Image (cartoon, rainbow, N blue to C red):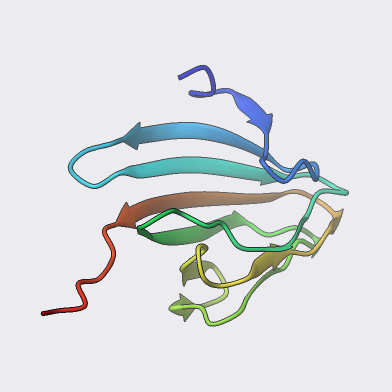
Length: 119
């Protein structure tokens, strides 16, 4: 819990920051973060593999950057101007570099067991 309610550098080491708001392993493992992208921050195209499970994420854009900071995702489940629902474990996604302003995103992620293949 050292990251709880504290800004820490994001995993991609590209300038964005995250603050853990909530997490729990039960009943469904999840995390809730506030993400901050200041000028110069972005995220290159990538996937976030999760061994043996399905990873889902809902990103809600609370504040758009004045310029840049655009989210892109291959095969999103749902996407509108402010709401992005996607599978980060199988869909390549990225955020363009913020050129002006600051982008804030509320990000809720959870994992599920693999789908049963039957018989």
